Length: 194
Image 1 (cartoon, helix red, strand yellow):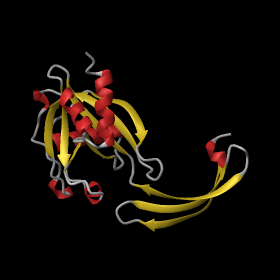
Image 2 (image 1 turned 180 degrees about the vertical axis):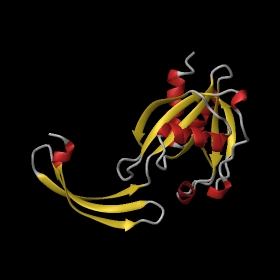
Image 3 (image 1 turned 120 degrees about the horizontal axis):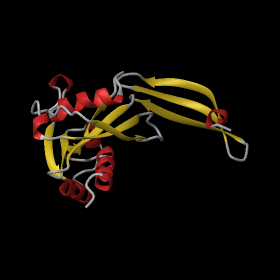
Image 4 (image 1 turned 45 degrees about the vertical axis):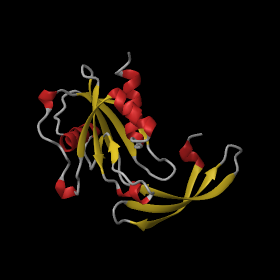
């Protein structure tokens, strides 16, 4: 039996369509023992996204960003977030969108972009699937200082760190962004071994 055979939607109501789409849904779920239970969940649909970690094997470095994130701030986090470059797809392919985001945010025009996996980031309430990429960079690929798009309110600082520094920043709590931690751990296991 597929999951779609185990769900019967009773009602879906739109709660907000201001920035993204927030809905509440009441549905019946068929449990493993065959009984049905009625449940209610809210879902936040912000679209799918992509993220990329630029790396330089020879120098053992990665490029990261640092910027203000209001949702982190309202939880009491009083610092800028250090992250891998990322953005919503906005009807583009994941590869096309992440190439543009990296150029806007970190100022590099990358050539060989490679998808390494995709994941649900917060499947208990957010519908987003995030596509994870890596790409090697060197100085010849730099086309600007990056910094993001001012018209989108972006003010992004570009950081170049060794992979060892970046991994240590996870341990100290300087890096708290899940997508960035996932990409750095993937790079440590698959790119920077030894």
